Length: 238
Ligand code: ADP
Ligand code: MG
Image (cartoon, rainbow, N blue to C red; front, side, top):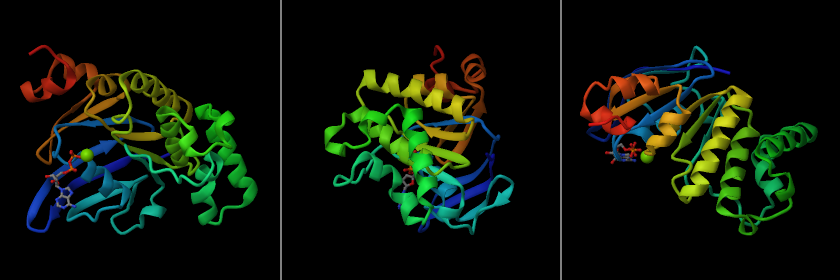
């Protein structure tokens, strides 16, 4: 397990700066939720933490080690996206094990990890199926399973439930809370769903135009939002 620290992190695309110096501490084992309007930089921040996007300034550290120059695969991170691109021609079991096989992990280690992930997500009966034989919720479970088998120090979620219908979203939110409780791993989770933010987060980070507007525990933000903008993201009366 590991915490994540951002120090004066900046991002420019060409001449346009979109992240303007973000400072943030995510404690070891903490569940931190990023909220903010579309385009405020949530995905860009996650992608920089994952190493999928270079940082233009500042420093990111994971588990106390600067990772600015560390390859994505070596950061101890697994990311879950909203579009879960499963391999259609592979079974669920093969989808779960593919990345591990590519990394040359030993067979018995792969089997152990797949069994454990399938058990955590309660998808054991689905292991022989192909993605087209799964429901949307089951597919999203497999996508999360692909992150779990990597046994990361940090999970990053970018709006993982926004393609699901309302009922399934509630069900998966409960599953993600259980996953965090069971694994105790650091998680950073992007959502625009107030209920997800309020119920999942140990700490909410409200972002606005590439800056941190306010950080706090859900109830603290709810009780004492810095302004109307923050109130709009934590469900306080306005
Ligand atoms: P969010 O996830 O909060 O909706 P993003 O992180 O996707 O926001 O985007 C933040 C800003 O950076 C937006 O203004 C977006 O247009 C811009 N942006 C994101 N990716 C790129 C890119 N590859 N090239 C240029 N601009 C980008
Ligand atoms: Mg985004």
